[in-house]
Length: 214
Image (cartoon, rainbow, N blue to C red; front, side):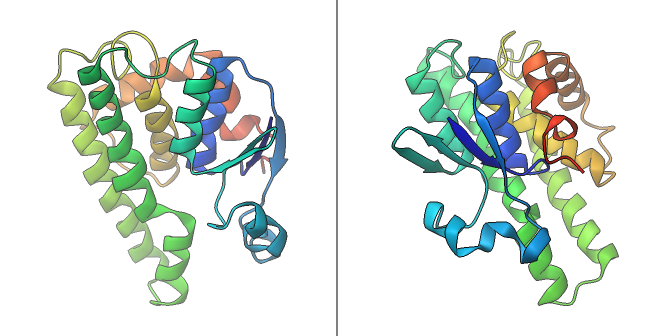
């Protein structure tokens, strides 16, 4: 397998965790999102992934973009350990937590959105950072409530085994801390993030452990 990745990309971070949890080896191919005008915008990369986003996974003849699709592909082709619960209600709950982060929160704070705010709308850095923190507070705040109000929450987002929701949570918390977001009202989010990062699969997927780390 080959993974086109950027060390600080939340979406790529999720996939790296999934690959590690599955015990799958892969070749890391760095795509710098800032250098050379953004390497993801090159014609050669766009031919591979028309969205011009990372990650992209290559598995033989299979070429996949979109982190959530990649993760579920990995879970279906390498089912042990499972990243989703066996029961329909549990799967729906885990997907709801994961998508609150991956679909509702992260896209609003993605690099291309922040660039548009600054370059096209002429938003200054203070306002851009306020935008970032606002959506993180709403998104992770909702996740905190989902975790706090459910007996299904355990050591991790769902029970005592890490899964899809945790793969999304940890990268978002990393970014929240990098932008100095206040997480003091989110004890479950903070606790589960800490429990995940104690695991080697999460630790080795961290931005500071990647070949293109700066």
